Image (cartoon, rainbow, N blue to C red; front, side):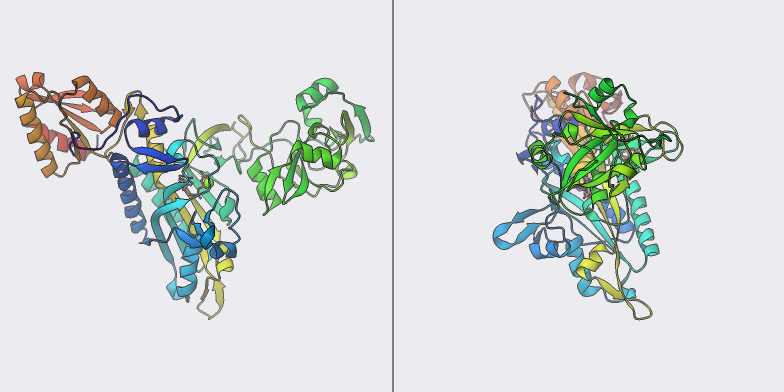
Length: 566
Ligand code: ATP
Ligand code: MG
């Protein structure tokens, strides 16, 4: 492709709306443009990268026996009502006039096909996949294409007759995913994860560590334990039960609102405080008790409370309901609330918590004696430095971006959509399902997060829009043009993807800057000075290493480099 006629709108300045390197560089290198919040147009260079990603996805899915489908993005709303997912928060975009929705994932449509055509154990197992647009009602899309309202996903679905077969299909995917991310040149790790809106019995996420990631993970560098904060745990002491159990005592605590203020005012150990957090679950009030200043993790709360809408209770609603502010709420005589507590507080006594009237707290609370606790759950967010649940070494907490997610779905969708088969003895059973997703744009953006420098993107040959960037330094020089043109034609004939900067009236400095910004792996520079010695220059973008080669050997040298993938 000749840059003189190509549409590659590079930008000198970083657009102000882009806060993270991948977003900034995708804009500056002319890979994409935003149409509206969370919706992007891919320009020719960006789309070439996506096609390379999709080709890798296809090859690895085909290698595990996947069969490619193309399922409709438009779905009847009724199908999503059948699986109880119509109203999952931040999930579905809908077209009201026709009772249609835009599919955020495709378990439902896969289920529709499977329920019609899977009849016997002889029809199983199946691995079905597609590479298709997904639509999601993401509330505040930022971070560029990492979180779009429209994005492309490789999604696959497995249908099996037994749980052992599901395990096998899941492992096949885990292995294929490792190969995919390795081929893309990503440094990734795998964590245990929560199944969220998908439901099911087990799931893992493939992630990269990234300063700007929206996910948080706990990692043990000693034994390799890795878990999304949504489910991460640590070994942490429970609040000890005191042998001397004293009677309840009301204490006046004027203007004491926070846990820190309470610790300073009462001069007690932080672990004796039971912090109250108030939520609404399906409109009903829930009090959540946490030890000391432990932070509540909302995903764990969602898992503990079960299906239904969950939101923090607004201060005015709480005041209207109890007559007290958030800082004065506690578990004793709190009528009309469901009360749950973090595992650390199981059976604890000698606790201090709000008295359900402003400016008062209660001391010596015994949760078994003075309150009605509906259940104890793991609700707290793990913190940096706490002991690894597997080996005891200190955990580190990092930000991360999810590249892919694999789920053992089990029978949730087969039950809802009636996907059944007859086993060898003629008995009807639900099909056992798995689902597996990778974001195409996420791979591209995560690659850029990991592979850029101050000058621009650093592509590898696996994903680069073009393997070679050929520069004719000065197009007013006949000899330069002649040699550059000849190299261009030779390399195209050799099957090399090549971008040729043949633009006239552009300074060499500008051409070099553009080449670094676009980031093709190998730059071939044809200039007056080199040609005086019969040479052209080859630059490796990643290392910056430069070498001069005889102009007649250049094509062969470049081919060798591209093939060696150096
Ligand atoms: P996240 O937690 O980041 O929202 P998710 O758990 O909702 O992701 P899945 O439903 O498992 O994601 O989707 C599979 C894959 O699709 C993700 O691993 C990610 O690569 C990609 N993906 C999900 N949501 C988006 C989005 N809004 N924009 C771009 N890619 C996405
Ligand atoms: Mg999501």
